[in-house]
Every structure is written in structure tokens, then in C-alpha cells.
Length: 124
Image 1: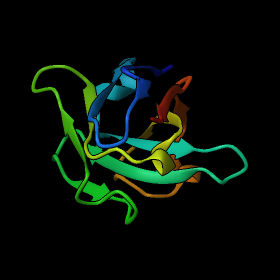
Image 2: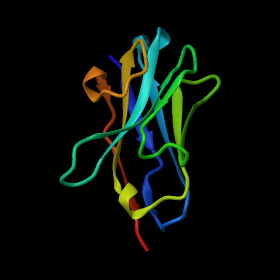
Image 3: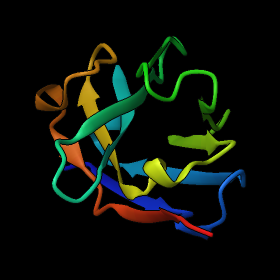
């Protein structure tokens, strides 16, 4: 059983930066495992942000955040980060960490494991 624990959400002003973290634990993470970030705003569908395949370091980005958000991983731990720069009010959402066996993917349905979510609010 894989557990994903997110941290780092909060209230920030437009233009600020924030970094989210997601630590994965469980035997499955030791194999070929990918982790991704999604977000969901009230009344909207879950949106893909970024994903990273831990074994190879390959990455995918959603169109809406490319250039502002960066996904990365810890060198020695099964942890991925989402660095969010130049935040906008429309980035306000609950951000979810997700994990799956194998290739990184932009499709939420491909992910077997989900964190509890962390709220990010961008407001002046």
C-alpha cells in the first residue's frame, strides 16, 4: 500500500511563490513509479499540472502552468516538489499528489494512489 503525504499549501498573494511537497512511502515506490500533481478548483474538473517518473526523471507539464510551475524530486527520497512561481488568483485550488506504477501520465484515471490534498489560495 502506497501512502502519499502532501505539505506546503497556504494563503499567498498574487505574484508570490510557494512550494508543495509530496512524500511517498510503500514497497511499490521502490520500483518504476511516477508521481504527479493535479488540482481542483470549486466547480471545476480535476486538472493535470505536472508529473515525474522517479526512475528516469522524465517529466510532463500541463499547458496552463508550463513556464511557471516546476516539478522536481529529492535525490535520495521518494519525494517530489512542485515549485509554483508568479502565482495568480486562478491558481487557487486544492492540489493533489498522485502516484502510479510505470510511466508518468497526464490522465488522472491512470493514477492508483492519491494524497489527501492541500489547499492553495492566491488572494490579495
